[in-house]
Image (tube, rainbow, N blue to C red; front, top):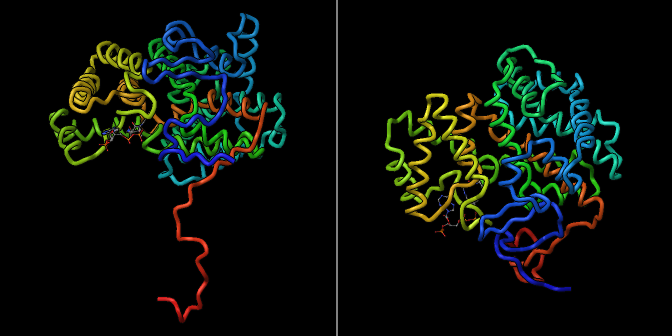
Length: 378
Ligand SMILES: CC(C)(COP(=O)(O)OP(=O)(O)OC[C@H]1O[C@@H](n2cnc3c(N)ncnc32)[C@H](O)[C@@H]1OP(=O)(O)O)[C@@H](O)C(=O)NCCC(=O)NCCS
């Protein structure tokens, strides 16, 4: 057996073969199934991109129509899930609720115990539709508002905004969210996807794998960073502080700034390029350029001072803020998109499975150490 020791955090380790997503961190390239993210951002939409991730090819017209139909028919949430959410404390964050509700969804999915390819695809449709519904419904429950039933004539992005706000979303809002969903859909072996693959590889089930992935995404070093960015912008704004001065002090105190840095990209994250543009345009169009302008000032300073680039989470914060979305929904919205990548990886893992079970380099007390009676212990 080879006993190569990986660096801390598995940096640089290739841990799986995958045909889904390719990243060149030096050149700032991201591609889904070989297609550059810039092309997908310019021409695709969430449904088509999800089809691509799951099937490996772009759909023809009929296949895309069928995909839409499967996804919209899956917009059903068992009443017992809604009742369960009603019983949660109002202090529960949407991300905690999402994690717990997705786990409970397995009780009501007829395919729960079936790990065949076709059952995994069916569960993927269900989870993709249901995650959006859970986020929107919980937000309305916690605000004491009526639940808005899904509208099967709407796209995934539009239906989410409709169920969240109960008003027909503007074209700009739908286009913005849809593009954000395309950009967040997959990212190779990021922490949550790796977690999902590890769980799937034990032959547990898709719901367990996605529940684990949501737990991993929640952390501030991963998907939770987008909420961290907006909270920081609010603190700076409330204090009436200069953003650059504020961030300079944070860095001097060795604090990390959410939305900067990346394990893989050594140059601009290609997703940030689009989100920056969206944030700027939305700021202009809505007459609220404040969040974009603060963000840009911080970015220029951190680029110059620390040689750190903005990642996907930095400008998604000001983008969602300008769309009027509550801060604690930002990470759930990341999940609303990343479910397409998680399920693509789970399906790929289970189509050619082997248990994922690495080793640890032992650094504990020398062997053999011995058990000693209580009275002889120091
Ligand atoms: C993404 C992230 C977790 C990658 O972590 P990593 O590959 O383990 O890199 P490290 O945390 O070891 O960072 C390397 C160096 O850059 C610095 N650095 C990295 N990200 C930083 C940030 N956001 N703010 C300030 N300094 C940062 C580290 O302090 C470290 O400096 P040092 O070598 O002087 O100690 C890290 O950049 C981070 O914590 N970013 C903020 C959270 C975030 O935005 N997450 C979303 C990622 S898409």
